[in-house]
Length: 180
Image (cartoon, rainbow, N blue to C red; front, side):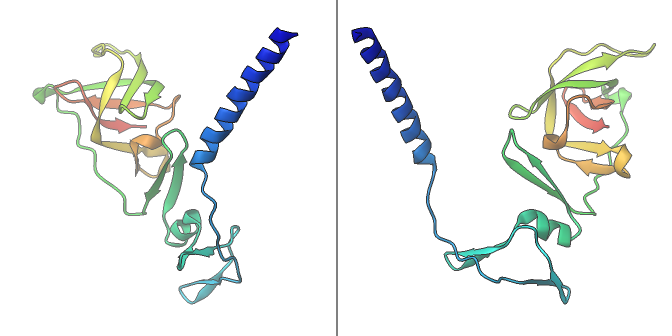
């Protein structure tokens, strides 16, 4: 009986402390939700999510605003990052320069560490391939091109495992360019 009471008390302490920890992350706010209209280019827009006013500022869903401006929006839940790319977000990827010690490898992305900017690939070999060691470090300013989307650039956080492509490694072994 004493063991049952003790174990129940321990469980209650754990649940209570977990609830208190989660409550510290929450903040209750008051917002005004009214008939807020959005007009863009002289056209009234329909929204799935209604805007609201908080502390004298109007908050509008980011996806709506970006789409209205012709931009693509993506969300990386792991990094809690919103990526917005405009239609003119195009950076050319310079070809691999073997004479400067660069290497071009083919492969499939099997792992991504978004925080440390590294990828793991399953390398595809041909007669000219040079084996590389995983994980591959990616330069923060690496140019990443997605060919299927009309050669659009993308951000590192938009890479997905399972994507296949080519990877340009600079003379130091860091990825400076990716073609998906």
